[in-house]
Amino acid sequence: MIVVRRFVFLVVLMTATHPPPLGAALILIAEDAPLTDLYNVYAPHILGDRMWMGGWLIPEHAPDDRIYLSERIGDAWSTPVTALAEVGAAVNDPSVIAVGGETLMYFTRLAKDCTPVPDCWFVGNLTGLAVSSDNGDTWENVGVAIDLDNGLSQCGAWAPSAITVGNEIWVYYHGGLPSYGACEYPLGTVFRSRFDAMQLQRIDTVRVDLPKPLYNVDVSQRPDGDYVLVANSLDLTRMHLFTSQDGLAWSDAGTFPIPEDLIWKPAPHLTWSDATTSELWAGHAENAQDVSSREIHRWRWQDDQSN
Image: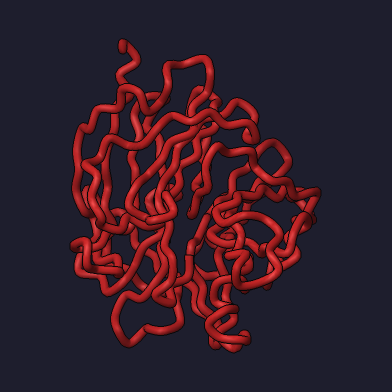
């Protein structure tokens, strides 16, 4: 999600019906901060040994968000460097997938000359697309993938999360703020757009059935085949869990058992070692008074299926 002292959104995961509820017995194995001393960086996304994230690495990069790359070196992560920037626009919330020999990055794009300001900062968030033929070393920004008209509404497409399903790409995202523009759906509504993976043409867009409003959704697929969704609560301080067998009907699996506080934990991302071991990544503010993400935080979880 693009920062203009704007809303940054935390994690919600969803639970399937056959294993025990995912959030019912999560045990925290380890916790650390692989990247620190950041000015305002969040929305991590990991593919292989590379992590993309967005925001402002240093004060001089503000106010136009850009996307950064860090690489895993042993047990550490390298200092982030700029991977994608666009003059006159803020780009953030990268979601990176490998498709047909190419690497695709879906990301939030906000034109900074939109009007009227500040209303457009809360409704003009679209999803852009960049393509790489060298595993993400360099990117070609090919333009807008999901416009203000997202195929179902005038809610745009904020903080995308892309996954591959067969010959399709499914992109999940939340819409803009209805009180500022033409969005016809309530605050925190989540959508899914399907694309043909070869032609990158949109097939359809649907509203995702979720029991509560969410921001910054991140969808992954567990090794056992279930889909898992994590997302921010609307106040950005909690991370919720849901699971699904089809990617559309979701069961509420609660929240991550992290002590509740008022610290922002924006734009989470979940990776899997196996069906019961996962790592949750998110931006993290220093304290409850801070509205900037100073580090990328990581929690490692074990799902105790014996309970």
